[in-house]
Amino acid sequence: MVVVIDPQIAGISGDMLLCSLVDLGADKKRVIDGIKKSEKFLSNSSIKKIDFQKIQKHGIESLQLILEIDEETHERKGSEIKKAITDSVKSIGLLEKSQKFAESCIDTLISSESKIHGIPEDSVHFHEASSIDTLIDIVGITIALEDLGLFEEKIVCLPVSVGGGTVTFSHGTMSNPASAILEIFKNSNLIIKGNDSKDELTTPTGACILVNLTNDSVEYYPSMKVDSIGYGAGQKNFETFSNTLKIIRGSQNNFVTDSVKILETNVDDVSGEILGNLIEKIMSKGAKDVSIYHGITKKGRPTNLVSVICDDDKMDDIIDSLVLETGTLGIRISNSNRFIVPRTTHSISLTLNGKSFVVNYKKSTFKGKTDFKIEFDDLKKISNTLGKSIKETESLLRKEIEELEKL
Image (cartoon, rainbow, N blue to C red):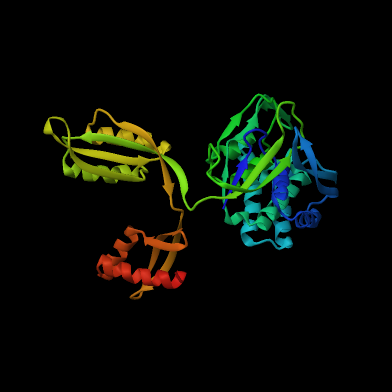
């Protein structure tokens, strides 16, 4: 299964994400009951009314949060909001991974404020985010995600619209996106983009929840069969577009797709020792793989074709190494799409012959068949320590892992 979050047009806020999840199929009663149980953990705030209702946003039927609150404060310490959220998700009885998700969301919000203002995290005070709205969004979304089982599924996000113009808040007026938004997205792989709406489309709460939900950014919808769609309406209305967040849940084949760079160059005057060292150096620069092929070029000259697979962000460093190490005068660059069988990384501790080892391996599943491969560096280290051959050591480790995994 795959879940696509689509904030390309209207951006994302906490209530929009919450509404889209409920519209996608999360148990509305469970979400509302959980939120109501949480209000007691935040003093001087109460929920007078909370519900979800269908509305029209530029002809799109969407779900909107109906919320009335009674609040006597306009500033709170970030640690107070965090404690209220962590106490809430624990008292509701959510799973441990759900509790960790909720805590990570508020931690991201606190951390961004800390870095912007240059103060310790325990000194952070919220103004706009001090409202019980923040608790409602994070707690409600966590309940909805667990109810839908989305923590177990692949989640990808399209480019996030942040709007344009200026934004005015407790610290004055600044260009949009505000510093908090930029700080939250800074260490993620998610892509942001502006538009001509002259308004804030992505809120700090929405951003902090999103970056903790997924780090997988895509430019286009993946190949998928659409099973369900959720539309979450924002509170604002815009003349030129529907202020709604879309979430799409569907199924796709067992392959994951990505795009990589292929770097190629021919060298005909480099020794085998240099080429061997080149492989190690390029891999240390973050290449996914390096291959060297022997061939014949013009005038019958023997040559070596060096071919490197890498991501965009590693390309410049690898090109530097190719030129400096081989003296090549040119490198061909091409894009290549890949189909990848999904795999997960695992680690176990084993005791063999009275000695303890950590063994890392990758496990893949395709068409109902599961297989795994032990990391060769671990295999080599254990083989040398035990004084056994690679083949014998691999057989021994596979039996241990198969017994543990019950494959």
